[in-house]
Picture 1 (cartoon, one colour):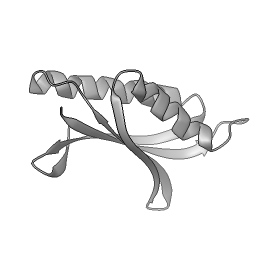
Picture 2 (cartoon, rainbow, N blue to C red; picture 1 turned 60 degrees about the horizontal axis):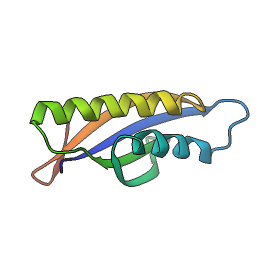
Picture 3 (cartoon, rainbow, N blue to C red; picture 1 turned 180 degrees about the vertical axis):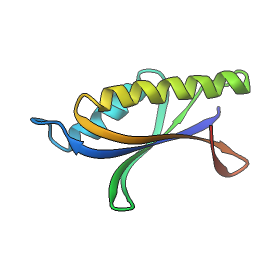
Picture 4 (cartoon, rainbow, N blue to C red; picture 1 turned 120 degrees about the vertical axis):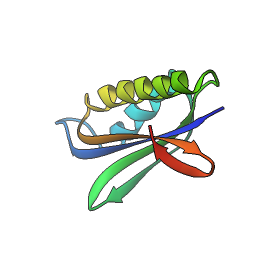
Length: 101
């Protein structure tokens, strides 16, 4: 199964939401379509960033990429209900390296 990773910058919280709600929303949304292998919060240039790694069912290369992009967009929509977001990047594992989709 192809492995993908999303990286989503978080620029702030929406009022009334605790910090843990951000990761919870991301994992829950992505997990509705794909198996989430790992998730973590990092600081990238001083800005919090969600990193989620997930698997997509093997089909055709372009279809897999399309599924990953759709899932990442859905995840971002869910996170935006509790937080303000910045850049979203989707990467695919290819020959031991992460490459942008």
